[in-house]
Length: 290
Image (cartoon, rainbow, N blue to C red):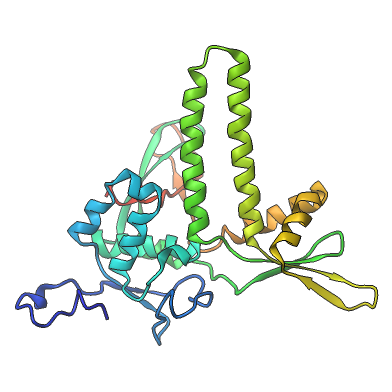
């Protein structure tokens, strides 16, 4: 258990925070070595509530953007986790939800805009109910492609998510700057540059997810390719049908973990629409908005 929480020499130690809940990760922590996490015998990680220092760190925009604030929060509230950035993204999502519940109670208010009448409804989401929807993540995902190859794919790490977040932020800033350009050709050139950067990032994230590609050799024996440069060359030169199959598989496995939406009944007086609305587990809103 964490030394900062169990210092018995301090006469105030009886008032130190204690675990408020226990969480089994979507991955079961099966992806991690001992230097990344210390896996409890029960498989359930103790979740401590945030400290004042933790809450203050979440108000630092730069630290939120580069993932340092979330990494620090996870290490503080889940002492068994040593290297948060090496966790799977789905595991980090579940941990953040649990920390929110341990820190501020089970209920979270979520605003959802009705696609029919455009009115905003406020609904209450239960942390425990959200975690109960959590889908387990397998050790790896293997699928046969239509061209006869067999591909094994792994989920995104939180490091991938940080990269995507930074790229999205930079893209938004670029779009704002592009809109201020007066020359049409300059705007087009700047837009193309921004688009290419995002496309390159999506390609790299898809490549990072590929663990191996297998094929049958002339003797009828299965051969497995794991060398990164060879996988990159394959992904750069395969046809678009195969590329879309791989992209769908990657997207499907990265939708596992905690369910990211909720069923909402519109609260507008003359609207009876029922719709699915996303739950924003982004730390900026999920914690600072609480």
